[in-house]
Amino acid sequence: MKVNQFVIIGLGRFGSSLGTELMRLGNEVLGVDRDEEKVQDLSHILTHAVVADATEEEVLRSIGARNFDCGIVAIGDDVQASILATILLKDLGVKKVVAKAVSDLHGRVLERIGVDRIIYPERDMGIRVAHQLVSPNLLDYIELSQQYTIAELAVPQCLSGKSLDDVNPRGRFGCSIVAINKPKGIIIAPVAKDVLTIDDVMVVIGTNVQIEQFQDSIRQ
Image 1 (cartoon, rainbow, N blue to C red):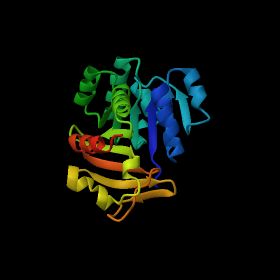
Image 2 (tube, one colour; image 1 turned 90 degrees about the vertical axis):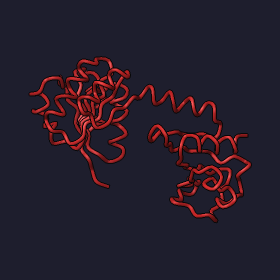
Image 3 (tube, rainbow, N blue to C red; image 1 turned 180 degrees about the horizontal axis):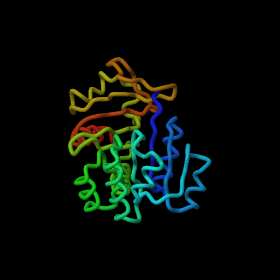
Image 4 (cartoon, rainbow, N blue to C red; image 1 turned 180 degrees about the vertical axis):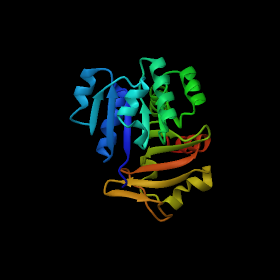
């Protein structure tokens, strides 16, 4: 796997969690924050962590921000600082800029700036938790677009021992099981003869309506 280099501006709960996971996945991460305590806490976890004001262009130039594969603005408590840092990363020519938004208005401003991806951590987590609460078999839920979703569904008792041909979600509902996570490993692109068991997790892709219909059919 290619090692990518990330610069994360803002080391609050979201930024620190993101940086820690990126490091675990084998990437290089530079963390930037004005709070010395936050930087100190992550200095032994990230590749580098520096105390700096990322709303100053010279600061971003001095740390070589333009050379990173991706710049992530994870500032959540200061919308003005978030927007300024984002503009500077774009102006410096960072290849990909991702920014956290704390509101729809904040997100619209970031979109106008030309951010490559806008993340709404609180909103997105709320949506995922809501779906998990109303669907007992739903383990995770990722919205790909307004129409399409990837969902992880625990195999209920009613499907245990059945093959994908027996379940036939594509023929019955239009959604597809694209992977089966079994205790001994994951099956990518399973075939019709693969059999589900109670300990398996199905990875399903389809429209929101298709997946909801499939969930309703297996709800216990």
